[in-house]
Image (cartoon, rainbow, N blue to C red):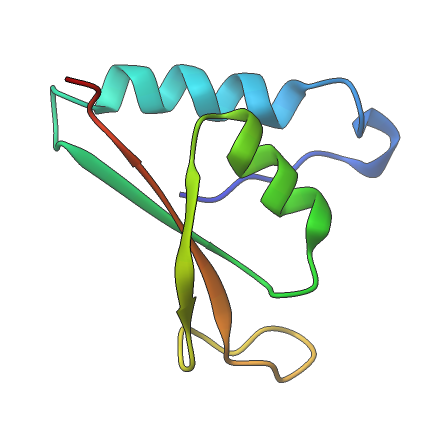
Length: 82
């Protein structure tokens, strides 16, 4: 999962709403779990994940290389609700 919203549109709930809608469609149809990763310092992206019902699920040391050279990432998971 990934999301990008132009900075002048931040704070309007666009990313959270879109992520929620796509996740609701995906879960149960395609798979029972969605995992997304954020840069450890990207608080805004972490809040988007949490508002879209993702739960923090630890971190990984080597996810990908972000623009600043960081390879660690925080992991968030959303699962089908029983």
